[in-house]
Image (cartoon, rainbow, N blue to C red):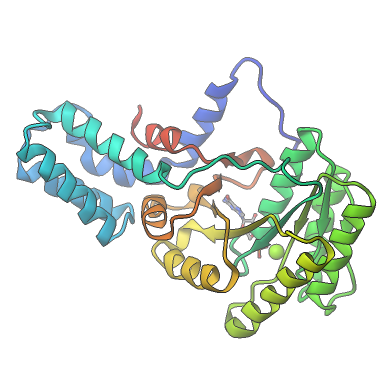
Length: 317
Ligand SMILES: Nc1nc2c(ncn2[C@@H]2O[C@H](COP(=O)(O)OP(=O)(O)O)[C@@H](O)[C@H]2O)c(=O)[nH]1
Ligand SMILES: [Mg+2]
């Protein structure tokens, strides 16, 4: 079992950055490894170098469209003599990646409402329940009163899993028998949170892909019902995406967004894939903020997403 998150007074932000680098090592290898000559000072400026960058971006799953966008921009900068050497090229590339990743980012003020209701959606196995546990741990450590609602009533094990997180942290978890209507659980959860003056409610949901249409209808109902208990809620509909599925996460995100009007994204399992570049494509295609990234299974392995740190972690030795 994992330990609660503790700020390491010695390592501070450095510790956080080291784990980010470690968590992104597979993507680092595919991306920075593919442009080793650019990163490590042996390259000369020319079409071959641009080709090398293009290939590395594609291998890291940045996606054809976004890769093309970056490459076109680099070529333009070269033509206009704003990129003159290897260093200029590397700096421009890093800057552009950071800008792309940052353009939809905005501050998430989860103190804006009380209780603040977070509805977590995504396909089975994407990491919803784990992410909820990690978020609950984080907010509990911040002194917030957090309540969980076990809305994945489809599988008893899924409710057990959420209950375990709640028990470990020492916070309440609202649940019903398996097979219960998920929107009834969400209703109970939000109602309980209002009555108990909780700061944050996080509602878990099911994500059976094979019955996609039903799933979306079920999720819409959950959302509607939450709004009936507490007008204006949910305050954040959070989509959890599994980075290991690479480009498929884009079509998944579009589908969920169309049905559910998402507010923010969490990208999990970045530690398990060399395809972390998909985040660039997600920002480019979705215009949604990435709230958190998952780089492992422990509570502290859920990090707030910071575009600049992310890019630095991909390139820095
Ligand atoms: N390596 C890694 N595993 C993760 C991460 N997030 C979730 N998982 C694992 O992914 C699996 C599915 O997670 P779960 O939360 O049950 O997914 P759900 O079906 O969407 O609720 C579990 O084994 C988690 O431990 C992550 O960031 N890194
Ligand atoms: Mg789950």
